[in-house]
Length: 458
RNA sequence: GCCGGGGUCGCCUAGCUCGGUAGGGCGCCGGCCUGCUAAGCCGGUGGGGGUGUACCCCGCGCGGGUUCAAAUCCCGCCCCCGGCGCCA
Figure 1 (cartoon, rainbow, N blue to C red):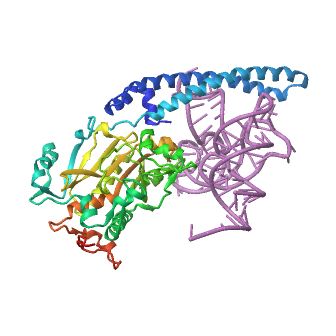
Figure 2 (cartoon, rainbow, N blue to C red):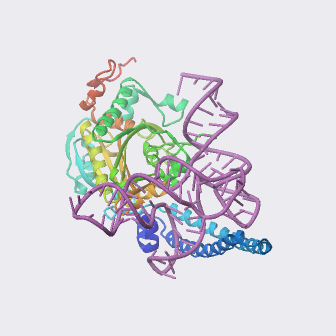
Figure 3 (tube, chains in turn green, blue):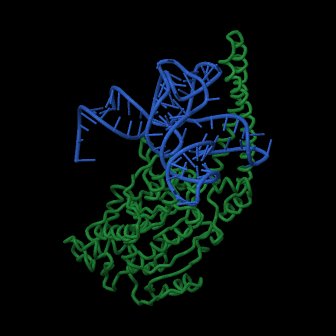
């Protein structure tokens, strides 16, 4: 029973209100939830008492002599009418209560910085050496030392070419214009070296995580509505999810969705936890709320490949697992040689399922900004409650909701954009990260060390 | 897609024909017994509400229906197995 949100609702609704306020959402919904829950419990008791009466009569009937039966049956029938009225009311209240409960976001972990937007994110560490074009130096220092973050950097005097330009005009290894024409904006064709790079990045992440003991999964790319809503909130659903026409199927926006659904309804023995999965899948996103942000290039697209870490953990394990997931992601990006910082995401920017979130943001030399490449969340029991995923504690036979966690390992297209800006030489040549060598070597036409600009006439 | 068989409290299974408190085994939890372990014995082992205990309600894939009463009868859907058809 102890779903943390329901428990808070009954024992100390202030905890919930606090969470709502930290998320800059209307906290009065909590009062309504408390009221509905109280009314629901009151009605349930009445209904149960009536049902009990009815059951008693029902059980007497077969033991009665035939001549007495008729009256009893009539009595039961009368009572049934009353019960039906009450049950109808109960159902209404219950539906209202559940709707309110399901609309509540997760609690907010005490270590989450409070603030309405990303400017309140707290950088916690940095790694790698950032190339900073002189013009961006002030901005870079504000984003690092300005918030107490020590990050290594070198000032460069040439301005790197932006990843979108690089892709389309310098390397000529992508065509988003044709893709816009035949699919719509935010789609792309990638060619040759960048396709190899896409595949190699995925293999790199898969290799690393499986060697750490994560179980490799190729999940379904579509889920039923019911399972989709177990994983995300309604507004994300509307903004992100594609539907298959005429079927109860929805394209996943990340392997996280399918990996959470993997154990829907299951009971996981405590000695098997934590369960660590690495999923690889395409991701489909409508980007409905994105407007014209990042409209050029392949930074924000409707479709990409991603390797995803997913964990099921005991409540007392989950915060350690959370740190492990982000440090796995960090190790992958250190391996690629991409300079990044990790931020503790502000309360106002948390998704509804997450109690705490780290973003890994890579420095983009041509944009003079840090951009999010990895998102690592502890969803505690928010998803597992909806999907009815519980652990079984052998000692004492206790059943309770597991904690679920997810983190990007590598998202292919975004990582490619980061490589295009960071591994660029003044001549417009792209250095292939050495760590990908293993995954390119065995293919005769795959790039090995460098990706070169297209010749003028091609 | 068609035809047939099936889905029971973690797992296995009885009950369904003929409606009347869902029984057994395994595993697990607690206890007893025992020099220790094993065996044996007793109790527990789905969800919810409650003065949190002696209670009550709901629960047999999901949703409806018939009935005083449904695991059981009827209808729709989902999934699994087998056969046929189609197919990379």
